[in-house]
Length: 565
DNA sequence: ATCGTGGGCGCG
DNA sequence: AAAGCGCGCCCACGAT
Image 1 (cartoon, rainbow, N blue to C red):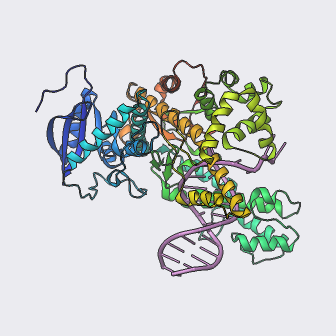
Image 2 (cartoon, rainbow, N blue to C red; image 1 turned 60 degrees about the vertical axis):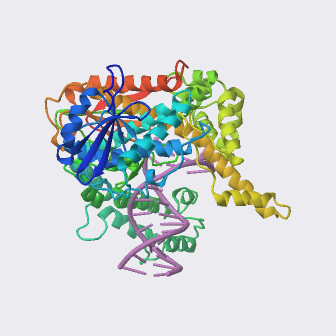
Image 3 (cartoon, rainbow, N blue to C red; image 1 turned 90 degrees about the vertical axis):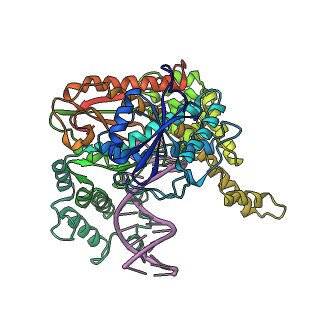
């Protein structure tokens, strides 16, 4: 074996499950060339990782999802990783370099993992030489990353890998959840809890009123077709039973029906059975899926983590002696757009806490509400309605920003690929999409085929238009998360432990993440320092992405016992 | 019984 | 009020 890395060189350790109950740790150089290796038994793996962490290495791992939950519960942390599975997905599809990573099914998760694996679950694999497989893949990935001269793909893979660690740590720590508060909200809203299988009292009352007003005492309100027919019978000729459709009609049944539907949603999505299934020891522990959305946003699995209704936010409550730091970004996506496009006029409008107010000041539109719908319409591709009518005004005032999203839309309509700021690329349109397009250009195409192709092209254009903005916002958020995590490690240990936070019982930690929002659970005495960490991390994220371009990314941040607004 | 699909609605 | 993007989950319903 060659000599160990010199003092100034970053240590890189590939950690591979090389056999039953056995791991191999290989020191490699930047290009992935092997220096030396050692085998580590599972029983001492966590201890070994803790020791090696003193060198601040970058761990090369197949996947944080596989290896990290077990390490966390055994008391080990990884500070930095290169996550081969997450990076594979980025590098395989990127259009930022001429030769992306050759796709390999070995490095693609076969199906979404519904549950996090148990402690060091052995994942069945047919690899003859798992060490060589990992090192080969790492070398291939380094090559693609190195081909992007500006370093953006490297930054993206590092940020994505950090996200993989954060996702597992969020689950290990859990979101502090006060069951008594949740139950009080349920009782207040839904009425008294049903004894066995029935509906809570307020829903029973509202349901009875609705059935009476519809003249059908047996009507099952959860059946959309039957409800629609009953509405038609009393003269409400709605096309659907959706909230916005029903609101158009004047009839005594509408108000109690909408109220019933609201309560019904709360009961089925976050009622008593949700509480029993998802909250244990005052913690809600959803599974976060890093990179689960094509744009790079996270998805989640189980418990509807990304859809917790605002009405239940008071149930998010810090432990005794602890507090929450709740922060979100105001209008992240249009700010990213202004910076990507180097649109000075839009960046000027974005100065300060309210971008929409700045848009009004620029004279493009006359009210804040108009500004909001114009900006959203620009990013989503609105063509009709008031939002679509306002978008052209923005083209005059912000030609660079609008040019960027309009270009992205046009490329998508033509079947092309668009990329985020750091180089995550949009998927190719499906074979079916392509065949619809080619049929429409054939000599014997009829008007219906042409219209269909046009519609589908516009649909895909709206997707690619939004992809560049949503995806770049996701990149900003990933760096923000990684930088917050890094800074929290520097804070002192808690005076009062929070045992249900597991490995984070004595440390300020991230507890929730939702696209452009974080919740930290921190010891009271650390609250101000943690808040500073969140602000500093945001500034660093902006600078990493956009250098000296002057774009404000202001946070709405508060220190509070609950997450209620 | 079990599965896939679509309506509906929560979140950003 | 604005209807344009991205998700996950519950329920009913029809197909198997």
